[in-house]
Amino acid sequence: MEHHFDYLSPALAQDLHPTLARARSRCPVAHSDQYGGYWIATSYDDVLHIAQDWQTFSSELGIGVPAPSVGAEGGAPMKIYPVTVDPPLQRTFKRLINAYFTAAVVSEWETPTREIVKRLIDGFIASGRCEFMGALARPFPGLAFFNLALHAPAEDLEEVNRYATAAALPNSGDSIMKLAAWITQFVQERQRQGPRGDVVDAVMNAQIESRSITEAEVIGTILLLILGGLETTAGVLGMAMLRFCEHPEIPSMLRTHPERIPDAVEELLRLDGSFVCIGRTARHDTELRGKSIKKGEPILIYWAAANRDEHEFENPDAFDLDRTRNRHMAFGAGPHRCAGSNLARMNLRIALEEIVSRLHGIKLQDGAEIEFHTTFNRAPLSVPITFRPWAAH
Image 1 (cartoon, rainbow, N blue to C red):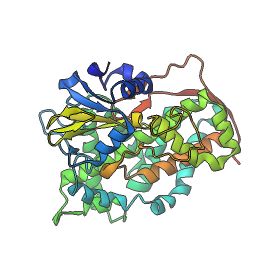
Image 2 (cartoon, rainbow, N blue to C red):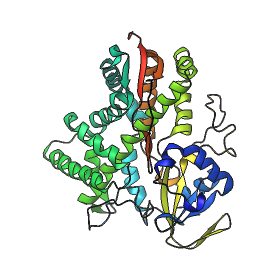
Image 3 (spheres, helix red, strand yellow):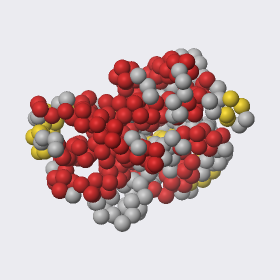
Image 4 (cartoon, one colour):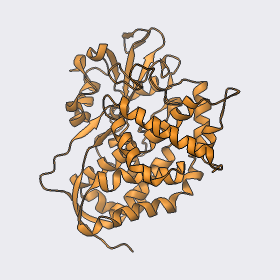
């Protein structure tokens, strides 16, 4: 299996964790002959080492294997800042973003974020059923991000959400370019307006290594904010709902003990984080677990496999709120660790608080067949559920 590992395969999307567990136990550093050849790392220690060692395993030289095309046809691939650059330039972009997503900043968004969740649930709760991805999981993070972080027009959200979802699929270049076109128009409009003191202002007016930021860098940075803020959170919510349907004791327990919801968020991120992998490219010849990796060869590092490594997590496939140590890598690791982790955690906590308090007896609708998409992100395409409505207090 490991010699023909296809990270774009629909079969992998459906059977992700058992497949990664087999790869980790048989050959934690393996080589695939697909798409011109690439390496796969699946153990916790190896994934962490590669993520931290940017001087050996570069993002700037490529974050994927050769199959996907990101960029205009016939043109150069679009850089997504700061994901596709290495330190020290990467740190400049990262600091620019980090200041607007600290725990203190996002805590100020809690009340309006909760209002968005309540409003979405109000829209479907009376019927006792919904398609959860379309009714809450996908619109919620986008509405919150558009309103609170970007100050973007709410009427554009459906279109941008559609592009962001499609961008997580194979051959996503067209959707990336449509997102870039929307960002270009959005930035032009913001430049005509007065300053908002938000991350968009900071990006538009940034100085990068003693020069003004370029238009391509502005677009690439805002592109990262959108891709990182929408589909990833939606995927975790969708996976959480599937887990709640399969294990109804979990939402029941959280309803009784809402103080455990932050711990539940961490376990859900570890077990079902939607950010499943990312690529690096070897800057020079190197060796990993006795395998010779040549300069220029790509390697996929699987966060999803590392987060279930039995050498790091006792009983790794179990949902356990009493773990004394949960150093999961759902937000990545190393210099490229996700800048929006505080926002994602808050969004997930608030969504779960409202879901478990207002939707009781959650079940998958009869005959529901769950399918997934995956490349670097994994999310269920649809999660049709039934439930007993519980009046808001």
